[in-house]
Image (cartoon, rainbow, N blue to C red; front, side):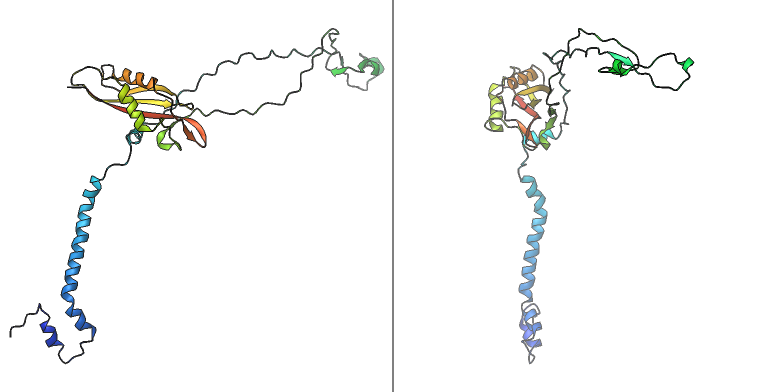
Length: 264
């Protein structure tokens, strides 16, 4: 009889008359199944490792257009607003009236024949201020008494820093969401009637603390008045919900790409 070593017949011959309950007999008997399972498991792991980059490339990018564009824009600080001179300020208080002063002469022990000036008597310096020289006051001057105030009020510095949307705690938002904003721009933007016109217009603007849009700038356009049209649409935009930082409303820089595609 021909013996095939790839079958389990040789096991019975080898272990004939021996203790088959020993672990070696069971291991060799199930060796073929174990080898097949290991090959299948290894093939699955290898396929996953090879196909992982392809699967990751097919997943949609979750980052929004505005966030991806904001990473290319450096935070810009607007020049500080010029302080207007304060109006209706009270006139400065009048100078205090002159008061009689009597020159104070230090007492010096000297000989009688060397005394050149007699020191003032007590009756002369009573109710008078002592100074370096004798000054006659104005007897007709009006006495003015300034009212007692409460001291200087606490000065609150206003935060006019322009923040970037990438690092703001609460981003500004258009009423109804950003999809509504893109829809508003698409409905109101009038594309120039120019054949073959195609490209993108990049605009930046600042969402103020009251939700209005200011400092609208065109970073790049494709000509034919596309940049001016973007400024016109943003000027008529409704007020936004302003951004917040540390619980306070702040100014936030925002960017908007507008894709232009003329009818062919």
